[in-house]
Image (cartoon, rainbow over all chains, first blue to last red; front, side):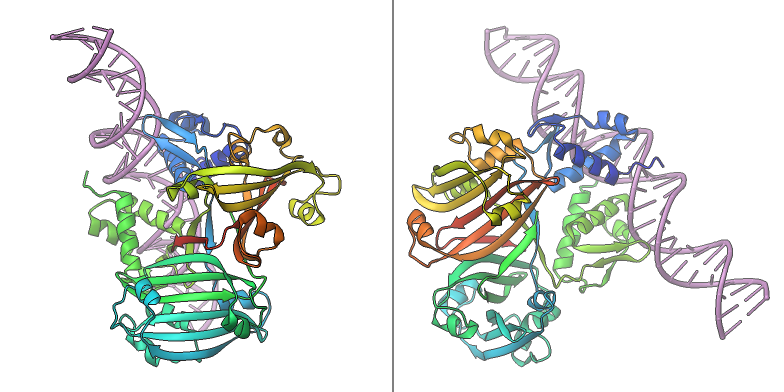
Length: 230
Length: 230
DNA sequence: TGCGTGATTATGTATGCACATAATATTGGA
DNA sequence: TCCAATATTATGTGCATACATAATCACGCA
């Protein structure tokens, strides 16, 4: 072993790229050249460069060579937070209060989101998540009882609806949408914010194969921000 | 050749995982078993599983085997959009108007964000991004001239500030923060929205090594949402 | 019974090789 | 001169192999 690994070469080349050794869009040396330079086989270099291509740092074309990506489309690994962990990571006490829970026909908007017809039955749930007894997030959730019939009898005092669902039906796909909402009367009263305040909002629909599982809307109290690094 | 590629196996196994063939945290078959199943060599399966580990779908431990990552914390690959592309992908005409551009000492808040002292010089830029001549995003940007002195003379009529910077100084790291802002008088007039409307806001600070490059605040017009899939 | 040592096992990594594929360069014929 | 067929080249991919490494298991000795 040479001390040279594909991971090591990947790091090294990445560093050279961000250090500006080659201009954006410029061709970087070929696999053979790198192999000679690092004294390893072309295969090893190939894996390193492919990994960099996966990362979006470089673009590769057969015969065209490898070039630094002109617009490093910044991608970030966004970790969708679990509310309990968000609260507890701030050293606050987490608690939940179920405001409302019933079974009803979904609104037309929700039926469309969940891909349901008129006859679809849903559980509707309004939950207030508290941080040190202060309102943190207000959650509206519709659960497709056609996909998850057991939800109607689920005991949500122990575990939150979200955790219950994750445990019971691992979803395969989810659509997330982030936006800003102006607080209406309902949100104002339940979250204890001023009328018309701007609230950070996350809407989610999750799917189990072709079947929808749940649609959720999370309204964060004033001042919340979702932070992450590129 | 078998028609079996490491990419294909990667897809296949990923599908089987999200289809719930194995429970969260559960051990999935070993490399040899997959190799037998897909009739390929262990090396090929290894590459597929390593790629899945890179994606964060599975966890691998030597001798411990490969297990489905207990992902109650779903991670999403969030592609940070380039405004021009956002507009053009909606089949709208993109245009920019520079509202204000000057060189000034940063406010204390910005100086802190950018890690500057009192003597730091910044370019300050207010830009309005338009979609079919309608306001789409209002951008406030401070550029650290200590890191990017050339910015002062950059010709921003051809390329937007963002594209100019990306082309000139590839950043190595960025902090992003998403929140909601209530429209003040300034935002109201420039974006043409109602006073107090909730605006989706993205704040970004990018770094080149230890040196800050730019701090940006993007205020999206009413109704915007940032969508992505898990 | 308790513990250390070595065997076993599953994965990690690198290599050389053969062939596939796509883009470019070259050549040859009309 | 122009176009099509062919050669060349850089990367893409899979395979067999060899060895590395870490966790676990089995054994045997005290």
